[in-house]
Amino acid sequence: MIEVYPADSRFHAEHDWLRSNFSFSFGPYYNPDNTRFGPMRVLNDDFIAPQKGFGAHPHSDMEVVSIVLTGKLRHQDNLGNVGVTSWGEIQRMTAGRGIIHTEYSASTDEELNLLQMWFEPEARGLEPSYEITRFDVDALARRWTPVVSTDASDHVAKIHQDMTIYLTDLAIGETRSYETAATRRMFLFVIDGDIQVGDETELHKRDSARITELSKLEVRATSPSRLMLIDLP
Amino acid sequence: MHERLRIHHGVGSRVLFDSDKGNVPFTYAQEGSGWKFTVQTAKTPEIDEVLRLKDEVNVFIFREKNGVAIEKVWFYTGDGAVDYSDEEAALVIVASRQIAYHPGDFEP
Image (cartoon, rainbow over all chains, first blue to last red; front, top):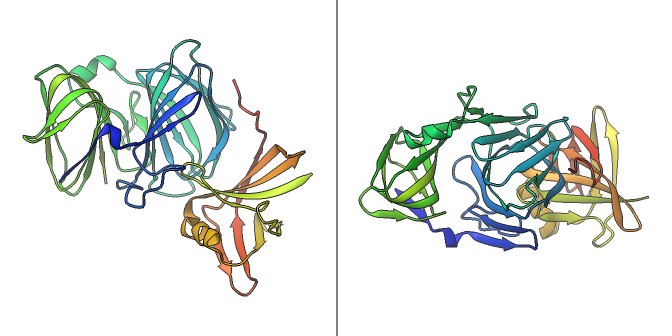
């Protein structure tokens, strides 16, 4: 089953320095039928003005993944970590038993656009941790490139959940297929471009699809596209 | 120094409870290696919502001067308990860990 969530169906919040689009219930937006997709709890598509951001606040028992699309994201936390993330890098934070951090746009003139995702971990009370990993941007044009996974490596951030986040780029007319167990979930998000999924489903920029009971996915780009695919339980 | 108990939803920080609203009396004290909060309140719809979301709440003590929080203490309840005691007519929260911080901490 493929459930399509158009970009404009997301909850939109606007402040003087922040525009947010919530794919799931978050803060002021509460829809009891839209609180999760398996362990996935949050996907916020945030646009943050230069030098602005979120002051000190806590997290616990969540795996927080940030993918910066434009601009720079600066993180600082009570563990002593300070990091700046930009496109080509992944920021992963295991909140576990608790972490306090700030998140700011480190750009002086460019808007920060980031995708921030929260996933429930496989266990509660984990040791808090933070990392930045760098993936091979050129590989995106060749394959679904894992950038976050339970099977971590030098270029793949570690997540404490049985899941993998992939990114890929498609040229117009190019197709990419993906196979997984039919018992798994797939979350597909169009970062940029337009695609066709299977024979009938069209997705456009910032649309998403929640896919269940399907073992093979085939996507075809109808314009140059950048996609995120999450394979999760 | 005024102390205020606040309970937020951990997903998006929606405020679920604020002791200043209605001047709800509460106490908290160290108990073993953790902390126990007792909030004297009826089981209102607000408390029902705290209980529904008990696995993902952020519990804070805001220490305020002139209405401004100068220190915040966050308590981890992930392996503790958030329950309503009919016997005590109170919301009872047990936390295992705390982190104190200040609003300006970790700024660029």
